Length: 224
Image (cartoon, rainbow, N blue to C red; front, side):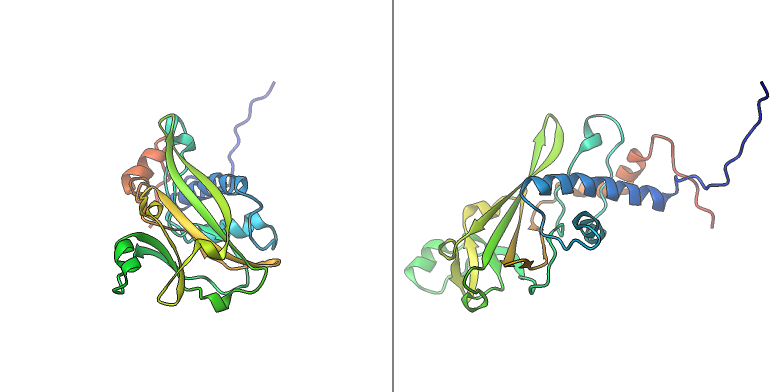
């Protein structure tokens, strides 16, 4: 038996940029699996729906979780997470509170939280679908988890505020939830992202979180 030493010319995949990219990819994969539980994802299949989702996820904050322990499989609700990608116009949407216009009904609902949209009744055609995605940040067995549900709404579920469609209810004040309303017309849909007040993810975006997640073997020092 002859022992010989060997040296790989391939660079070690432990640079900061490589580690950040792997962390984002891993977390995006977890979110994708949860999104699929809500139904067939509404993404262009070019080359695949998952590939398109990963591309859009690069615009979201990067979160860092350790590779071992209870938090290793943590899933975090991220603002701006894509839930659909299509060719219909984007539906602008935001969370806020109902104003009062002086009517008795408006006075009663004044201050109620709502999901406001840029849609008008004239934007909808017969057969159109408005699908509401609800994402909830939960803690299960001491581990952060995101649960996603999708519901097709009817025109009766909306109120008209300043000529635009809005969903009104106290549930939109939940700071551990996010929403995204998708406009669907046949095989086409709008490109939508999650709007949320949830800030639970923020401690996982810090330099301290990155270093803790990388503590398994350290990062390769950058060469200036």
